[in-house]
Length: 186
Image (cartoon, rainbow, N blue to C red; front, side):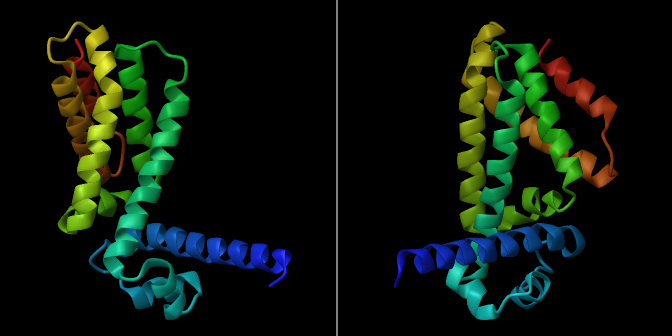
């Protein structure tokens, strides 16, 4: 196979995978994860069922990929927003605000945050991601003079995720919830 043809096949495969992920994020908003069937997904994406199974193998692997895609995107946005901020309160509140705002912008995320926990592979991934986020926040709690910075960071990550679920259920930002989060940092 000529190199150019191999590149175009890889590009086409990447485009199909992206279509499936984007379609899943849209569908999760309408159907939740429980209603997100492979048939519905391939119809939404405009691809064959064989393409789905070629890229993901099964529904559980797909849900894991969907969850990873969301968290990769959100982690990138948080990292950009926190940029050059010094460890401490402002950095923590900036990261939390970006997380909460992003969750509200992508309504299908509720399914990923709540329903996906029932999938063992996704639950394991959530635990890993939360540990990663907590590890990144530990220095912030150290800068705040907390005696147990990692444990404070773990609680912060859990509280921020719960705040996202509350806001998603309300369909809007919840100023009192966000203020309560900031009070934890006082």
